[in-house]
Length: 332
Image 1 (spheres, one colour):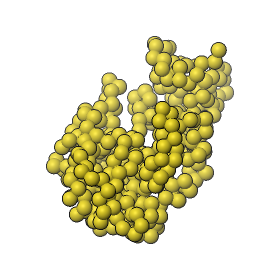
Image 2 (cartoon, rainbow, N blue to C red):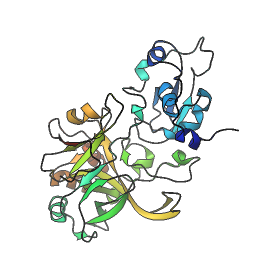
Image 3 (cartoon, rainbow, N blue to C red):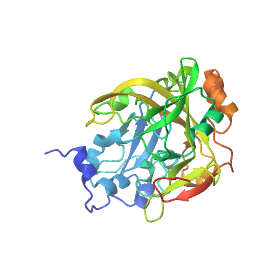
């Protein structure tokens, strides 16, 4: 009987690695291409099979069934397909492993780590109003949120009918249609890199831009023992207020979680870009787009799209510092 993907994700028993990392890199054994299907991206990288075998303990023949577990490292969309020029048991004549186009594997399955998917907001509404200059506050008595995870409700400042307002929305924008093939729910996309993609470009107009208040955000550090504790970054030890540049969409109907069924939510996500020096030491792929001044916020919220997207750049080196390690929340 064919085993399901759910079974393989649950299985954690000991397995024999198909090959060592050394053999993998030196020969043509046991690797496959991960291709992005987003026509505005079309990125491809070579992926070692070994980390998958270590993690899930299954054979090469079922690799194709786990393609929906991959998110493109370039555009962020879950639009990948797999091809396997080196999966056959007979590796004679197989393509050599293309190291220059490979995912950089520091630890087994470290390349599956998400980008910023945890942040905190402990500042008060008065400070948010002074920096983001919103007119209306729809959040009531907003408590401190020392740990905001994907799919959580969190405050955003958005353009709504010609004025700026502070409101609550659910973290995770709608996934592209082709990324949902075979899925019965859409947990949403939290980080957006490829703003040239048609899927994201439609939400870059002024009416769909927002800023997301935060006081610190975390990235996972991969340690030699395989653990990945959070490392928290902020603009200073006192956790001063800043904002992520984001987008939002109102009243989106979808199944976020199967047990909930279809729900209607205001959704948001924020942009990412190349990491600066401090973040790059911990996470070499990306960092959130951060706005630190009222002028930058005004530009993101009111400027034409071509001018606004110029803000999708790393924060300058030295602007961030590590303020906490190893904890799932940061209360300051």
